[in-house]
Amino acid sequence: MKVLVYISILAAIFIVNPVKGDLTREESMILGLKMGPNSAGTRLASVYRDSENMMVDLNKAITQVHVVGKTYAKLKHKPQDYYFANTDKDLNEAINTLNKFQDQLVKSHKELKSEVESVLLEN
Image (tube, rainbow, N blue to C red):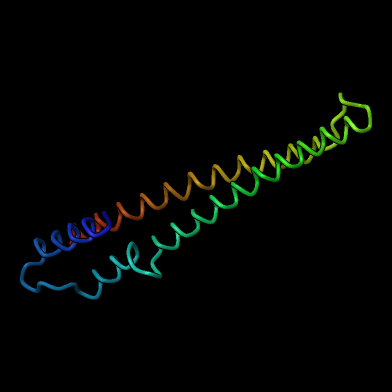
């Protein structure tokens, strides 16, 4: 898929700039934002993968806190009590914040791709 996008961008550049046939320095810089090992697009994808791992760890943590809290309350013969409500609340808030962060990353990545393509097609 990435190769097809790259080819389509290069084809668009060649159509716009048929005389040279290769990328100018400016076009290479712009294309470098989206593709390559150290590009902004690659870094955004890497951060998103890291955030997915964070989400898994947060869900495991909240499950563990919840189970231990309920078990502890039963062992103390107070099953109606829950000792980790504040921790639950904070972890749920962290999960909600991380969901918003992931949404913003996806939006930023899409905008980056779109703007790179529009800038290259304009010139």
